Image 1: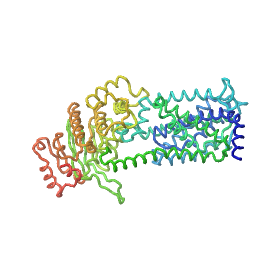
Image 2: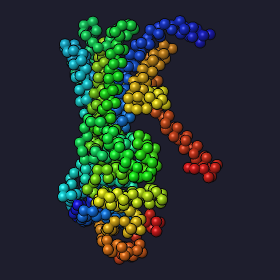
Image 3: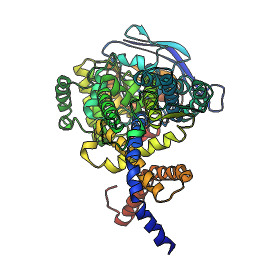
Image 4: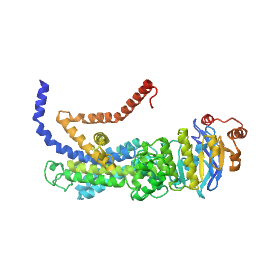
Length: 325
Length: 265
């Protein structure tokens, strides 16, 4: 009986879900930009960089403080980007010059950034940037409006510009050397590529984009919070993986531009699914646990697939005897 | 062209895994020399090559390539003088990048990497001609990922990449050891062809004594971190594998211990 009631209620509250989906899509667009930053380190450089949990909040803090001090949102976003690059530089120096494993380097920077982000916001845990008082590029207020000031329009434009820029950059001579650094370091050095420098540049570039996403998120939600980056890396990874799983099979999503678009769409899917799950009654406090479990499953998938294939090959070799191994 | 002046290298000094890999290696190569390098397990063959390539810095001695002292230069800065092919076919190429992208990376060895387009259409034509010479059909698969190629194909490609920009010195580190005999033969023939056509100076580490005698104009044998035998072209022409083994025994005072070398007799 109870279960029937649950579904009746759910059906009744369908308009409520419908009302929330545009907001989820806009959030997905912002986190998609963040996930494109994660893609640079995770997929192109093949390092897992945890700096992003801190640098997204740095981007948000910098943008909030500059905007309330009278800067234009464009200038604030540019400075946020630079601040993110600086965070990436620190991780890069930890990793290359000081020889600390990449994952630990990111954790160290992320921890330090917590203090720095508080300092940026003058020792407050959050800073409001109300769309009533300041001119902002995006605001959640207009997310259901069918007008030109709907935040999804600038977010889509920023995403497309970013994808075009990345497509160009990773096809330049220097961009190719960055990709080579991630693909094969020994080979890269043999071809005269300074792999250590490239790793630092890649980390800077990645965190710059992540901080830019932080600046957008701050404007969108109307405040910056020192904790806004908690678990950001997991959301970024979720977007990358969902994008690959859902769109990887299709040809238009094979090139660099296509893969990045898939990442952005992955983030949108992630937020839409989360919204549906919350609508179905999930306690929002359990959200991070659910996300972590889902990402863990997706990360385990290729590993299990490889094991299964190996077992199958072994079985065939035993049964057949003359099979081609 | 290459001057290795009394270099020495100890790995992990002062620890339980301490390994005196090179004691005193002294070797001078003239322009156009093609030296084959042989020796037992742990004799220091690959270590000598890696010392030249800059994979690590030597403890003692100095290394000059084409008159430039490279002793303290990091690996990526020496790359402009060197073409390298590794034992593992996976090492020499980037699997997730296409054939033409790999070649473009090699084509820019020793040059600054700018924000110009990474692979131009003019150079693609050049790569196509170079690949056609391999007779492996790779010229029609230039936008395929290198990861799809076989070990032999990847090694042939690496060799081509190493010579795309004429290197002052070509370093071949047992580059046919991981291949089946037929493919190894093909890659060796290609090696000789490329060295001759471009008049390259080369060092080739091999575990195959027959190849060591058959290829190149000079052979050196390493033992316990030193060069113990240095054979010139005239002597090489007369020697058999048995002679070489005998020479080794006299010079080192012991039998030869290289499993793969003995197996390949």
